[in-house]
Image (cartoon, rainbow, N blue to C red; front, side, top):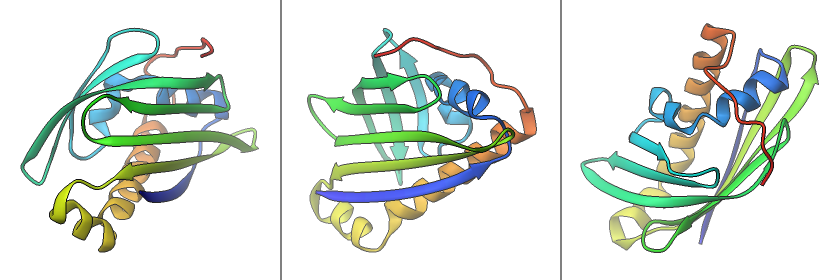
Length: 149
């Protein structure tokens, strides 16, 4: 199993950062390789990704969601096998630390090599930087889901 941890500080209040992160269907706007996400229920999302020409579709279940604090998930059946946690920590009234922790099982030789070369770490860091640009350029979230799981 592989693991990556990255974080970014965003210049928006914790509520704004968290609310935007709950808008899963907006992820393609800042996550490279994510073509589409469908929110199928409060706890189930369907992902379509294309990374280096490899297209995958999979479901992920939200396993924990606490407003303004955390969102945890894990894939459901099939590949890829991964689980993660995003936390939101207020630094001050207008700045939030967004931390992402992810575990996954690389599939095959190519993914194992990409993992060892730091591809996933760079991908996650880039996605978080793009999230920062996305939310800071807007200043407000595109929506919110304030429920708990």
